[in-house]
Length: 87
Image (cartoon, rainbow, N blue to C red; front, side):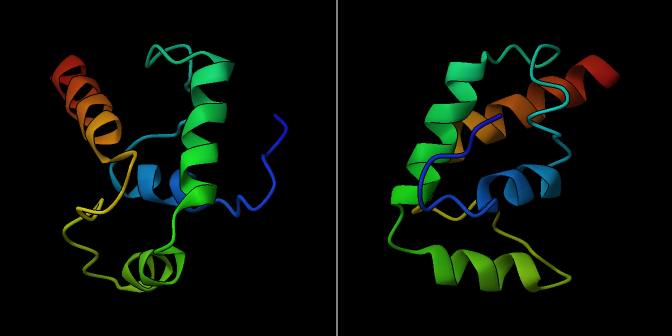
């Protein structure tokens, strides 16, 4: 999958912290390739990348995704849905 300019993988790392493997499991969680590209573009456009990187680097990484994350609602929704399906 082609990554948009400026995207350095933070969205995928954030998703992993929530128990999601966005790219390998995209079909299972109901995302198209275009959806993932949009998530990456939003992440690349974020002005808080350094803070995000710091949060992801903490072992107790809580409050993820942070309130400023433009992908927050969708990532949390997908993580909850995946958790419910696993029950």
